[in-house]
Length: 163
Image (tube, rainbow, N blue to C red):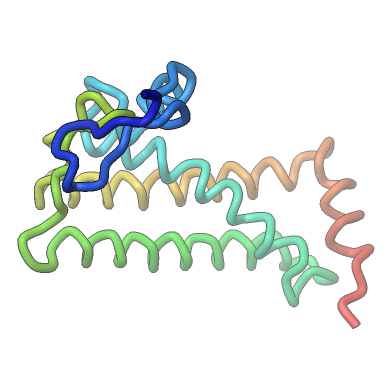
């Protein structure tokens, strides 16, 4: 039988060939949310950095200020604003009710971090997310203003006519 219950069959958590395969388990357990021996602040930094970096592009390149010299700065400020809003949402989730729910071990995640799923741990995660997101946005802003990437930014941002 390739599909069987992980623990209690009434819960509905099944071990399938997809979610209990070696590749899936290795991939998900290597993510910052589940990697062992990381503090909640470090987890937030590692999650926030790519969010800030990748959110910068949609604000700076196809944004309403794309034909002006303020496009990159407006993109940076808009990204920092969105990262701040997301951090507020993370903080609300961590403080509402009894706090974040601790995920039990299952077929995919063997040892979920217990220190992340507390109110204090989630607050550290949110502050790390904000710092990482702002740092990722600043790095993308710096990278977009370098001599190597600036012509590509001008091509994408200035070459698009939004109708």
